[in-house]
Amino acid sequence: MDDKTLYLITADALLVIHTLFVGFVIFGLILIFIGKWRGWNWVSHFWFRLGHLLAIAIVVLQSWLGIICPLTIWEMNLRTMAGDQTYKGTFIAHWLGQLLYYRAPDWVFVLLYTTFGALVVASWFWVRPRRYPQISNEK
Image 1 (cartoon, rainbow, N blue to C red):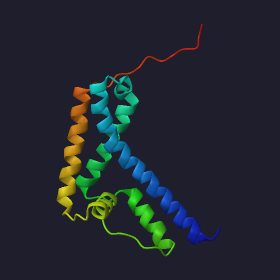
Image 2 (cartoon, rainbow, N blue to C red; image 1 turned 30 degrees about the horizontal axis):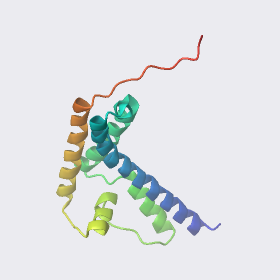
Image 3 (spheres, rainbow, N blue to C red; image 1 turned 90 degrees about the horizontal axis):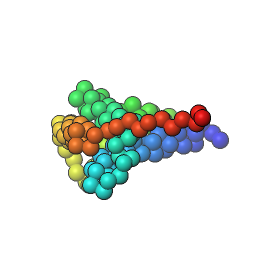
Image 4 (cartoon, rainbow, N blue to C red; image 1 turned 45 degrees about the vertical axis):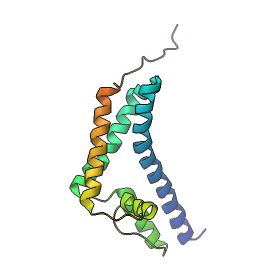
């Protein structure tokens, strides 16, 4: 396998990871609210909720600081090394633009990320996370 192919495969793998991360953030919150309504206990699991909170916290912090996500930077660098096309700006801004044909200034995305982050924090109070007891195999 030549270097170009390896770079493209790695860039595509990063794109998949990035997409899964975004899906976890978005659909995680949706599932938390649906789970509260439907009585699903797993949506209160402490580690799931902490991971979800940390994921959106990273996104909000990066947007406040004007930092492009490292996954985006790595993916674009790999595509450049492979001689492939790259995109400008952030992962979310690019793909939202592709999906919705919508262009917006950076402050719009900062506001959206911050609002979404506030919803995740609010979910901690509405759907309280809880630690489940450890199951012991000892007799």
